[in-house]
Length: 101
Image (cartoon, rainbow, N blue to C red; front, side, top):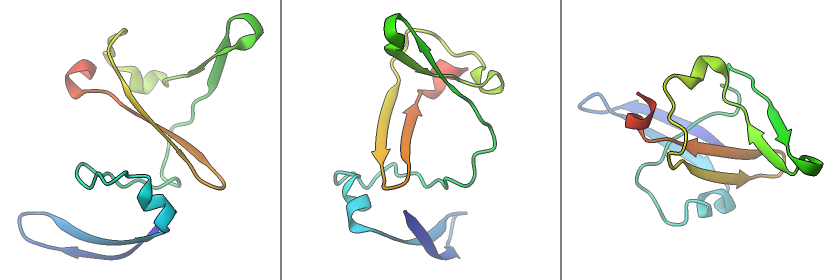
């Protein structure tokens, strides 16, 4: 987990953020330093569930809450990243914007 140490306004409506985090966590970026997004595990305001289907409940699904479904198209490619930390596991899904509209 990281912690924001300093936030400062800079030109053109941008903000400079200084973040402190464990070295092991920064390694999970695999050297990709563009298109980085910050989020807090304390900020989610919508709760959902996992679902299991099939024989021996072998297939598991993350349910998308009704208020977030919008116009999602089935069968489109979705990028997923799994981040494992000591206390939590994060599954982050990314859907191209034009697929959601």
